[in-house]
Amino acid sequence: MFDLQDVTAGYDRRHPVVRGASLRLAPGEAVGLLGPSGCGKSTLARVAALLHRPDAGRVVVDGEPVRGWRHAAPRDLRTAIGVVFQQPRLSADPGLTLRAVIAEPLRATGRRVEAAGRAEELAHTVGLTGELLGRRPHEVSDGQLQRACLARALVLRPRWLVCDEMTAMLDASTTAALVAVVESYRQDSGAGLLAVGHDHVLLKRWCDRTVHWSDIAS
Image 1 (tube, rainbow, N blue to C red):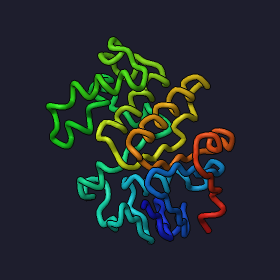
Image 2 (image 1 turned 30 degrees about the vertical axis):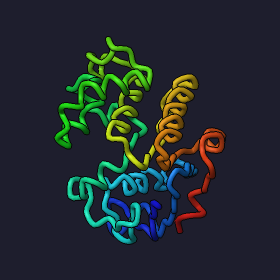
Image 3 (image 1 turned 180 degrees about the horizontal axis):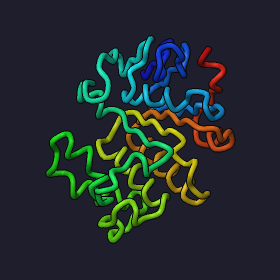
């Protein structure tokens, strides 16, 4: 299970963005979190991805309470969760090629030997041609860069995925292609998914169930 229990979080303790949010995902389940812009969805997604320490509450992943965040989180927990953000240009190092963007988590975890082959494999999976892999973020479109960011999220074969408005900046065809990649991965791996967004139609089609922000947070 993936449990967010009574989470309060923000960037100023006096004015939390998220108050008392609770959400549970079962293994293999796809849950859509629906809510308007500015309600705190992205902050909760960062907490779920172990990238932001909450001010209160607990996160429990596969029965293990999370006690460290970002690089202080145990490696087995960090690598259990893959995350894709809304704005790929803010989440990809502009100095890296797309090949290096995809392989970055492997290099960071000391698995350099796997990097080249796994990057090529996932590039094909997400629809990136070989010649694009040598380009840097400023040389490709938003859709192409987001494909690389999705491949990066999958490169360590995570048990859980957090997609925070992953398709908000993309056209319909790219959105459909990336959702299909996520669903194929989930079918093959049994991974659970938290898909955050404001598009009710997309989340309803994509997820097993959809919850509204007002139902999980005070």
